[in-house]
Length: 155
Image (cartoon, rainbow, N blue to C red; front, side):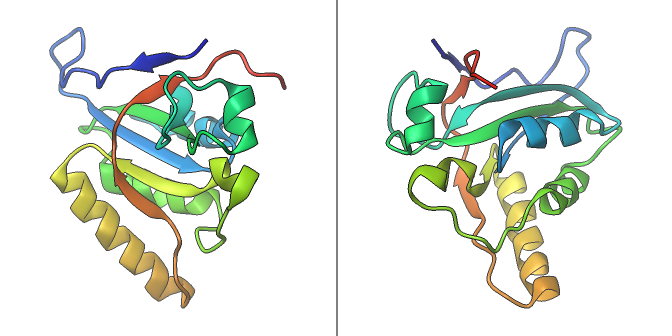
């Protein structure tokens, strides 16, 4: 059973300011692997967000009926890595011009923002991606809501 994870506090155990970012761009395993390697990332958590069903399981999300995306919550040290740098990593993970519908919608491209500053940065980054790619980017930019930590899914 998955667990809703509340938004983490703005400071960690050592009263050091930390940032939180949430990204969806394919399988959360792949997304998590990339962000774990970034210097300044403190912790990553796989889960589901952006849907309409409480306590989604991997099996239910895989059907496409919950509306959730597989996502990764990234806690980071802004003194070591900026949100903008994390956005650059996000764009390199997947093809943000490729729509995902139906059962594949759980792999859609989305940035779940935690603040107005993140929303501005994400909008600017999306516009820059469209300029570079020369075609529309289908990445959703949404307010971060409930994040459900992933259950033990089959491999």
